[in-house]
Length: 115
Image (spheres, rainbow, N blue to C red):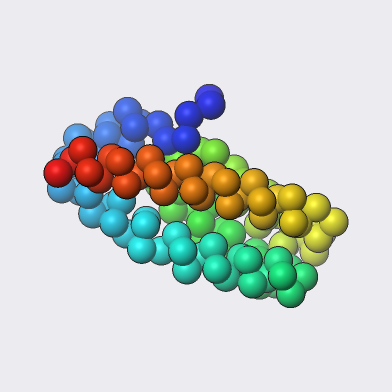
């Protein structure tokens, strides 16, 4: 399961509705920068209470579009926030940033090809 986004699972979930696909992608891409900024702020301030909720929201919306890798990275940060474990928070955030860039690129390409 090395893929950034399971396009087939996403298409099956939305019954291959191209308009719904475009809307889901637009909503995801609109919310991604806000959530990433909130998580980054919590990481920089070393404040676990500022990390848990946006990481949870990012995890949920990522699972909803079948983007497992970013969802998994967000889950790690959510757990770190919940348990107040900031020992590897910078490393966890770096992984999340990479996954966010990857999913953003894939979704933008998908949006372009969807017309």
